[in-house]
Image 1 (cartoon, rainbow, N blue to C red):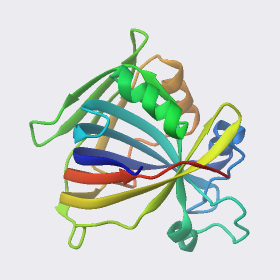
Image 2: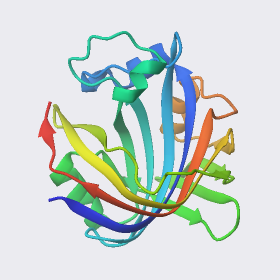
Image 3: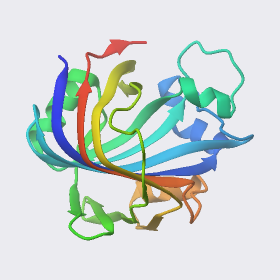
Image 4: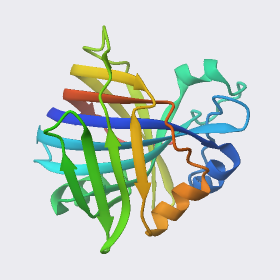
Length: 226
């Protein structure tokens, strides 16, 4: 530790969803979502091409929620975002080595899936299938450059496995080609149970905003039980 990723491309979209539904989805973790607006939580959908790192090369998709740190007693709201962490609810990958490492080292909810990433054009696309069923087809259009995004504030990621919730220190130590835009994402849901779960969250057609990073370097620290 830390495990290092030397080069990855990251695409993500942030969606406002029903806070009550999001709480129900992650109730097993013992964590609470951050309400950015009354009754609204944030669901993050992301796909990553890991091109060089300690866990080799692989593709990954993530479904996560912004959450309040354990023991937090402050009121939720936009100001609470500064302290928010991210709870990883579902994390399919396409290689078995990173699946076993992610589960064992950090408790990440990794599963094997077919992840088709198409990153060579201006539009970034992810087609995700699990057990032969379409989960989603997601398209992100990069936006305007993000000044000052060469390094980003460290963020706590949270996982839950085998009845234990863990905190994982995570940091983007270098971010080249970072871009952001309002909206910027299109998504088509399939017939997989995760697609149904996303639909029941009240996932809107328009994202709050989307981001892309063409060259990112990251570190993942040792997991600690919360």
